Image (tube, rainbow, N blue to C red; front, side, top):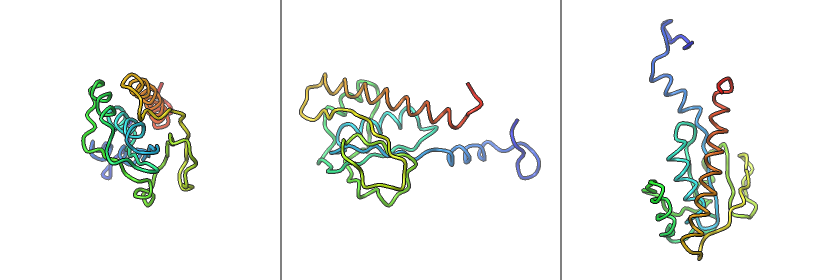
Length: 158
């Protein structure tokens, strides 16, 4: 049943959309250079989970550009990482995040949000097959995260 709106009728679609937007989790993906792993995770999360999360990425020591192989493996999965570029973790520390996914292998200087660690090898300097394997691993982890967030939003649904 839809909760009543301000005048006793059903809540409007825009009110439901506003409530859904408020329920979205802000997720930050972190790696070392913000050129491969965290960029992949951000792209997968935006592509597959925009209903439950807003995805961002950053690096501990950002590279000059996103690795070309990162773009290649994402495009193979029909994901266009438009507008993504390496960002320093410090540039986003002032923002609020509900969850931070750390793939850097180093402790993060963040205490305001829940941090989870994902062990994913850095593909920098590796061949395209290795980039594909890393992308597949990150894709599976992101899908698992999205499914968990959807279950949290709808605990009564199966």
